[in-house]
Image (cartoon, rainbow, N blue to C red; front, top):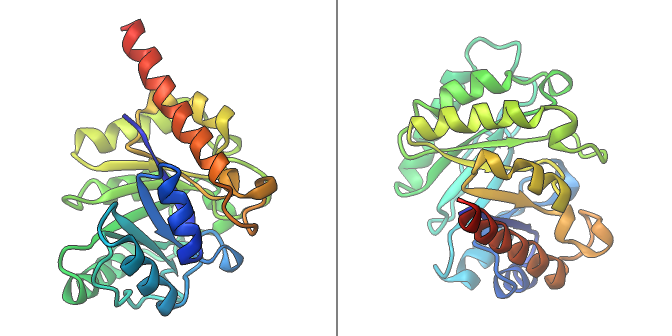
Length: 238
């Protein structure tokens, strides 16, 4: 069953999202981009506040800009973006080096391999290339997202069938899958056949649907309940 990952920028947002049913809390600073890195003290405070009740992940920015790992020991997952890496043949080695540094400070933390659906304008590696890399990372996660947050969604850049193909390839390799990219109820419904482990959201659960606004718990509950209803419907139909 797909669960909901909610990106937050503070302890209060983390608590609101958790109380409303989020399965994973992700720490980021949305004003710093798609994978905007939050200040270290914010990450530490959220990890402490959640206290292991659900997994916590953190966005660490773009790899070429912020390659150092986060120092928070309680994180379960971290992720770097690969913007501007598309013309570098050594990006897999760079990402592997970052993952090695991560394991030294947080041995139990897993790296998320991030592909941008709008990879050409991000000058990042194509989703197929990142998916292939992710499939070599035992116990890792593949995230499909959008780089530029301009109102377009994941499905404006990749067809649902293509998303399903990438997700299936990861699952066959034992890699978990998260789908993001300004997803709302309509996009999530279209992507349910991909059977991701998580749908990752920010703007869809903020007040007025604005990603820089505060988390709205009622929007979180709506998405959580929608996912549960979709699973029940598919079970009854099988």
